[in-house]
Image (cartoon, rainbow, N blue to C red; front, top):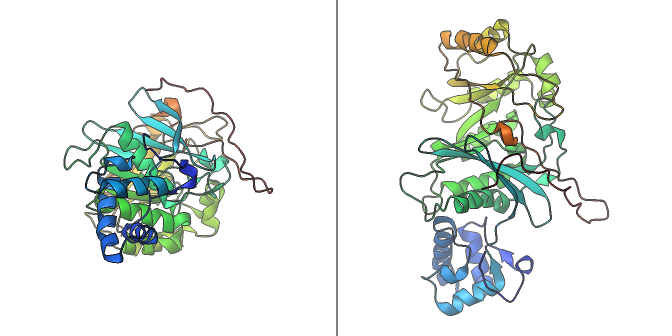
Length: 384
């Protein structure tokens, strides 16, 4: 960041993650008339979220004295990039360090002419799913809307994709599938998604945004009504006993309650299908009987099934199903009329694949002093 100011960034208010009304309030507080503040807030919004500027001096539609005052009082600082890695397949992963020293990871998965940015919603996770590396890290805290939005800014900065392109975007999709359970941090996640969808900012269509949940059933209908984004359900088992074991959240929201919430999801249709994610665990959930039970379980729901070969991590208690078992499972689901693509693993060599994200952040000590993350391990692939 090249922003010039006499005050350090931590003493200034960061405007990233604010909506138009909040930006206007900040301007009124610094002496702008209310009517003028609304116009200035619209201009600020455009510069922050459409142009991605990190320096108030670049906001050329604002007069010089106002730009100087803004720089004195506010900041547009991004989180520090503690580590950036690039996989052999082009996947990129950022370990981001926030103002309190806590860290979270985000991942960009490129395709030929587009790509999906996987964002985290929490530092750590309150869930303890047995197959997920993030689940081995206790929840440290929720990420604020600013910290969620900042992950998008960092990725856009890295690809120099400013101002927001109308066509041919490299970062074309957002998936809330990183660290944490998005529906346990709904207010901040919803605010960040609404900023991302705004046509005068990031301008990401709701059809290109997917929120993945482990099954917080009571929040699913609200998510659909208020955001209308694509819904992905981390299912991974077709019987309560097994799901209780590998996904303890099922003890609170069992399969019957979860599937009923999916049936009520607003906007779900054959054109907007719910995605059921199903990790393939050798000898655990990958039998032909499991495939047939899955088909029966989701009957009547406009759906597709993403079959995910298990991505191992240090100390993982499972192995990936064999290619033959995965193919047989997919064939049964396909024959029943459901699309069941097998997700190609991406970023495994840098622990960036599905279920592999984790940081070394820990909860703050009772003294109130934040615990510093342990030093990051050496990169597993070249940093670019």
